[in-house]
Length: 204
Image (tube, rainbow, N blue to C red; front, side, top):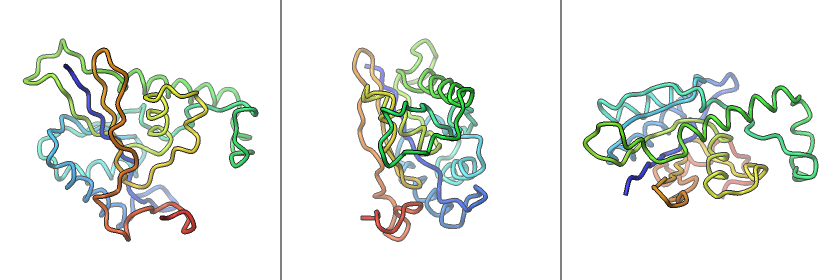
């Protein structure tokens, strides 16, 4: 059975200008060490600097694996919910999104799913049929792919958050629904590098 293994990771910790920090580089390096034992075929990354730098940092531990930009992985709001779908804690968050921006985000979300959320192309010539791909992206695209795998309503991407360089794994097989193997796993990070970007009050 052909399986596509997607290893989704949010970029490392970044500064206010969106640049990777020293902490973010350490996080990305540790994620690379964790993935070094996986037969990774490709590393894909968002066009944004924090994701680009994270991808190249972790790829130092994956010799000869191609590292390539994928526009679909850029940080974006995949779906703007209606007022009835919006939880009270998100009230006002989408006030600045007009119909054009919402439609653009939804097109990106559809392109993301069309490109990555499927089984591998079995017509390609390769030594094995399974593929293992690392996607270095942002919290919202990860949430959207998890929501899609669960066949949850579109608004359920809200509330699925990922820590910096936390690992989420989804598998796609012929004739079966997607399998979420893990979500937001930080076991490769020491305690002081976990939960960066989250308020102190919500760090376990």
